[in-house]
Length: 519
Image 1 (cartoon, helix red, strand yellow):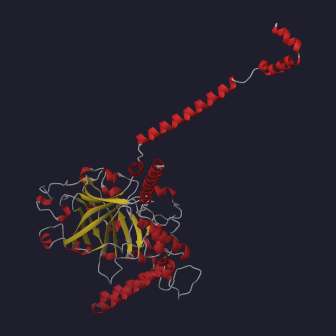
Image 2 (cartoon, helix red, strand yellow):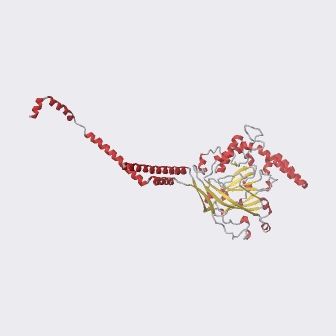
């Protein structure tokens, strides 16, 4: 009786212990499974030294919508009125202020009329061109002296876009041409400043000096003062330095540059590396997705999240209102582009908006444009690798008065028409934020196996022992079953033994035969 009670107590305690271990193991296994399938990430922030300093993309605009000569050619009435105003201002200087107001009023009226009449593409052809802004002699890269046959101006990949401020130009935006990356300057390399300069001068003017350490690019911009039609604003340009995949609206993240200054832009590169779905960063590699995109429906060349959002909003605006929103850059490609017939959207009164409802009381900006912004931002994911730049700017008057006084080459006209721009890396250090999975699949298996080992005593060795024991049992069972089947087949009675009972009965019923057998 006592042994029976001991067995019951032993079995009860063992059952409680096994149940506790099983519940504890199940709880932690479920926890680690939930944690793994929530796909957590770990962010590694570190500094990396760049071996080569690659050029960022640069976008430049002026605040001049239309060139004066082109406006005269396309509108003869404007040409006649402009000629009369010019003659009036020259004849009587007393009315010069009034004539300036009349000039600007005439220009504004003509520009508004052209914007309402012409498609965006045709209107952009009247504005500033890249050759009007650029002075080839002062478009230089630090790599040019080392690659005479591969100068950066030949691989600048200039992209023109029409924006509300005027024509904009983006250089060094990424293309299939990888030459610029191949010839990128090594960090820290520069030419010696102690060289014989123009007229044997040692102290060279800023524009002619050799490149400084970590300086990668230098250019001079000509604002073409004689062709300006924006008379009621100061002459200026807008400059943005950005990722080579982007094409930003110039209203965002830009610096204003004025003629008569030398600007030094010091940039620090920051890179982010993200993870695709199902991780929380949920990024997209737009290079890979580019092959799956319908290029016939693409309004802007999608290469980043920003361009994806702009392309999405542009599609919605075109589908609803059949016009191009002035808040987005219109890429000027060629005459065969399907969007070249689109006109600017007029949010003020609905001019040039082709929609189901032509009521002027409608808020066209929200209906055609703003209502789609949130949806497009949710639709477009961040890029798996993106670059951004921290930018500092400093400026000095250029050319300096001393340089003008002591040089035949530089005079006051440069201070009125032109600006000099230099792009330099603050240092060759690059800040990187790298998102990595917190748990790899191998780590998950290790955690899972560790829990089974702690709570239930399982291990690979134990699994082998259990497998070996089970396989032996199975083999033994198969062997015994086969042996029994074989022995049953051998022990079956023969035909003669089956007739023996008949013989015994016959002898019993025949006494004479039984006696003869006994003899």
